Each structure stands twice: as C-alpha cells, then as structure tokens.
Image (cartoon, rainbow, N blue to C red; front, side, top):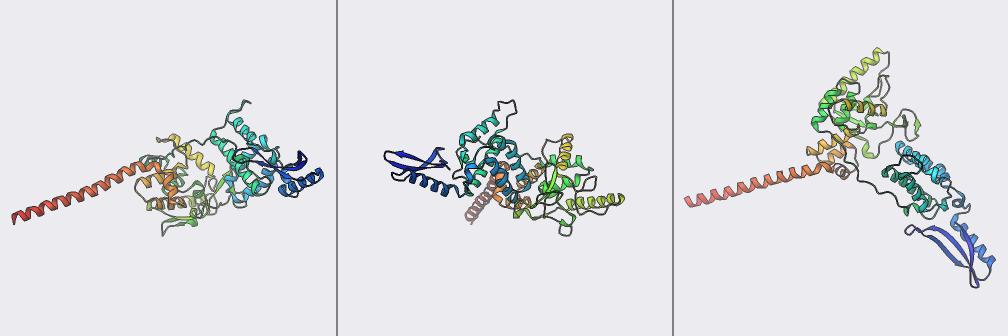
Length: 404
C-alpha cells in the first residue's frame, strides 16, 4: 500500500491507501494527523505503510501473475484433486496471465477484471467468444486466488468481490436413458471388449474414475459386492496419481469419505464379471502375459485409459438405436431409474457415493414430479379403500340392528 503526506491548513497528515472497499469499489484512504512537522508526517507515513504492507512490502511490487504461479497454484496442487487443479492451471495460463499477470497485486481494480470478462464474452480480436459459464469459471479462479492473497497478507481487500461476473445459466437437465433404452444399448454393445465395464457402470452407478480403478481384489463373489478403494483420472490424456500427482498410471483418492464404499451387486453382474475374468485370463495366457490385478483392460493388456473408455462409449452410442448420452450419464441413468422405482434416496446416495441424501434428491429432482403423482394416487387408494370399508361396515351394522 502507498503512504504519502498531505497538508490541510497548518497541519500535516500521513495518508495511507488501504485498497478498495469490497462493497462500493471505492479507494480507501486513511488520514492520520501528524502535527505541524512535515518530516514527522513522512516518518509516520513510512511506519504505517510498513505495518500494513509487511516488512518487505510484498504486495506493492509482486505481480498478480507471480502470486498465481509461485504461491497460489502450488498451494492448490496439494489440496485439490488432479483434474480440478489442472482446470485451475489451464484457466490461469490461458486466460488470466495474458490479461492480468503483469499487474501489481495492489494495483488490481474491479474495472480491470471486468475488462477481462468482457474481452472473453465479446472479443474484438477475431477470436471465438467464451460461454458465460466459462467466464464465470475464470471469475471463480480470480476470486479464490485473491481471497487467498488477503489471508496471506498480500492485499487487504478482494477486488474480485466487486467485479461483476456473468450470471450463471440454469444447469441443463441431466440426461438419462429409460430402462428400455438401456436394455437396447446393452444388447447392442454385447460382445464388445468394453461391454463388461459398460455393464458394471450401468448396474452400479459408479464414477468413471472409480470403475477404471477397480482391481480383481475389490470383487467379493461370496458377498456379491464391489469395494471402491481408488480411482484413475487423466489430465491431458495422462493418468495421474494423487497426492503426488506424478504422471503415471495410478490411483486417486475419492472425493469424500463416502466415496470409499461397498456396492452390492446383482447375480447377473457377478456372472458378467466372472465370465470376463475367465476370458481376460485366457487372452493373457495365450499372449504369454501374467495375470493382471486390473479388472478392466484394453487390447494391449493395460488398464483402460479413461478417455478411451468415453470415446469408445460415444462411438457405440452413435451407432445404436438410442438417444445420445455421455458415459457419465450411465451414472445418472442408474440413479434416475432407482429413484423412479421408489428406492429410498439414502440408499441411492450410498450406491453413488454421495455424502448427503439431500444432494442426491436435489440432483435428481426432475424424477420427483411423476413420483409425487404416484404417491398421491397410492395414498388416495389407501384412504378410499379404508373409507369404503368403514362405510360399508356401518351400513351392515345398521342392517343387523333393524333385523333384530
């Protein structure tokens, strides 16, 4: 922050710039009286500036780009999942650094940040405009970085709180197949190498990373369960391991504690996996390969790459007589069909690895209107039947009394 002196009448003041008001966006300047001596006012200004800025005055000379690349991103790499961190890094290097990287931390203004958003929404250099959702993601990164900068003492206020960000559009309704459509697709995909993985995804609702992180040791045939202990995620087509985030095939921790769970399987799914294991072992033996610990493997014998799984699924869907959905939508299909069948939300949440049933309800509320109507009809039938029984019973009682 800048400190300087100013005189009003016969008195000198040390004036300290303390950043921007997070509500109004106006500059905050504090006037500290220093008497009639200019030199005393200058000493006071320097002392107050040191107290506010820190002994090295980091925020005055440090650029936003240096803070992002040297401090914020390395710190986030430790606490975030690899895919999330990679997304943040991509936003910083592709969008934030070119526009704001050279700006000193304490010189950032809401208007400068808003100019960045405007240039992305309505570019004048011939480049393609970004969707409001993408620009909002840029805003989230800038706001989060400046929040961290405030906590670390680089700046006193987060100017991104004042900057006007694009409004978030309502989320698109999640796509899901009906039971008949899912059955049609599974019949079409039967015989494909990835069919066992697709079947398992549809019948368990697990995430792609969880599915491709399965090992044969996770299958308990006696109890008919699968244990979710790890996940495999990819960044720029490389598979990463957390928490070290080294570029190699490995395992990543689940999103929450509830992500590590045991999923009950139906008998048919157990049979599908058992048959696949036999076929996999035969194939590897014929190729002179040792048995593998990975449940789902590609034609080269290694674990299926996450992108290869999605791309293969997309090709199969385009050829099959079913509506187009993504691989992740198999998870939505699993949940939607269960909720529509009346399975309690808590049970569905446990299968999906959601930490709260309320999140499951919110995510699949588009299924609820039909269930509401069904519930009303069921309740009405119960009461109507009871009322009819009660009414006829009273009539019979009156008839018996008259006969007597």
